[in-house]
Length: 163
Ligand SMILES: [Zn+2]
Image (tube, rainbow, N blue to C red; front, top):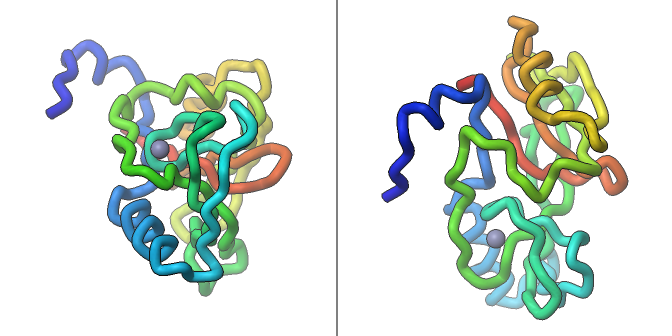
């Protein structure tokens, strides 16, 4: 059980939403079955393979599963299904949900969506304070959630919602 002080929970206006554990576990089972659309990849770079479940860079020597994930569900103009990684071995879901994940201060683009999954704003985070960008996007009452993606590859990394 995670124990957090009330002070820590009062510190941010947002909550990080990592990939649900059930989806990571299913990807591991499907990869184990040899499915062609779930690739097991040996990590060869310290900052090339972000695990969407623990929200850390997988490290050389580890393996990840590469599979397709619908971050924005089908049936909308901005529907989006694309490749993501999770650790091949079980990992702990990111739990410091009121803190911005330390591994992703650079190279992300934030996209703000409304309640109908339309993109209403987008901003690159690369050296500037990601929390300030998130808080600014959440100040717009139309913002339902913000998705962080790779600025180079475009892949979904994690979701951010209001606290
Ligand atoms: Zn992981």
